[in-house]
Length: 62
Ligand code: SF4
Image (tube, rainbow, N blue to C red; front, side, top):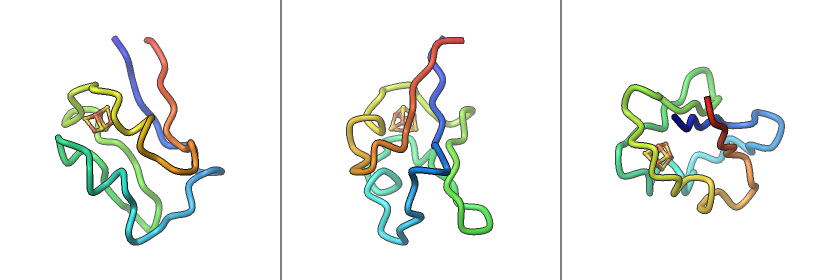
């Protein structure tokens, strides 16, 4: 099963995060300024990997 994670080194923590707006599952959550992906909500569509302008979302198989 694929999992998705945000690389905190690449993420710019923009308040207007495009990935957060476009995720169809509303799975991008923000805690203490950092963005995370809630894998319980995520439907594993992969849209975030293509959408992030900083290439901060990574996909891996688990
Ligand atoms: S894989 Fe799809 S559902 Fe999961 S966080 Fe990315 S955009 Fe949202």
